[in-house]
Image (cartoon, rainbow, N blue to C red; front, side, top):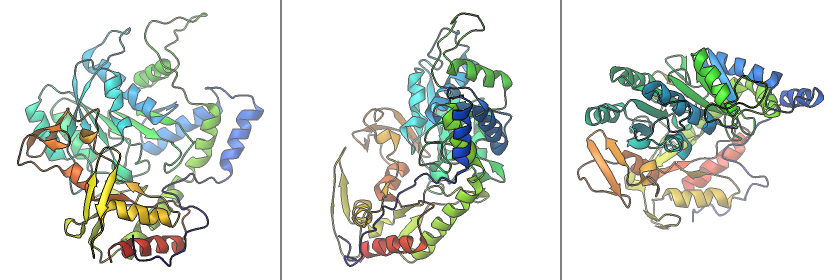
Length: 425
């Protein structure tokens, strides 16, 4: 345990990231209540779609129940555009391989499996913690028939999605941009969410702005926006009765949830500024320690959603992780993510490990992974092919997400920093 035992726990929990309400949200929720538009249609949804499209610099946004729903319909749209599946089909990428981010949350690629596809994971770049463009180019050399890429932007710190887009165009592939964590971040001044042929954003409870749930599918195609609206309302046809000619889903956004989102949007830039200050305080307060903070790629402006750090190898004590358990051995002058997380928790603050790469997950560990040095296949977390670096696994082993709540005070953050520093003693 860290040596700062004289530090008293916070009386009120300091969260990793929690909703920040301002009051405008209640006005629009009340409006939905008083006008009795409590369903999946209403003015709040209409306004959220307009605002979301404008903010993301695309032509159309479709409000949905979750970002995962948006990603699912992104895959369905891309699959039918690429492979021309008949309307009755619900396997738009059936039997097809899809290149996917490796270091992300499962929601990024689970929709590929919903639609019958086979994820192939692209390893992570050390300079960005996002999909490695060199590895993606290598993957296209090895699998030239692949025509769909799904790329997530980690923790609101985007990689070069524009470069990923150029590689996709070179190989005739479509790009789905998972901007769930990156709303408001930019690459060369262009908004994240505007690079994909189809993109998705999230309003989950811990995101930069929230509706407690919800998401939007972003597109520049009116036809695809209308198709998304149809699919999300159980694919009802324009008939007086319930007429169905293809598979549909109950994915529409609630007008009540949309009221919260509508009230949040005007505070997006304020939240980003607050998150940036949190990141900068960590960078300054942890200076001199053998760690590295989230990398910021040249030409990008993050939204700073979650501040994270990785511990240098020479400063790591022994740490072993099983599927659900972990053990470590404390060494003088060294630490590990588990010790830091325990120390943060002991003062009533919340952290978490960096995303466990998808190729290390039990359900996906037999899928191909492509690194910049070649193709690898996982087996019980170890590579069969030798000589290839596993960047994603290395970042996971050394990484910690720090308390990043925009309501955390400077004094509270100073205490967290002191606790982290104590772990290196």
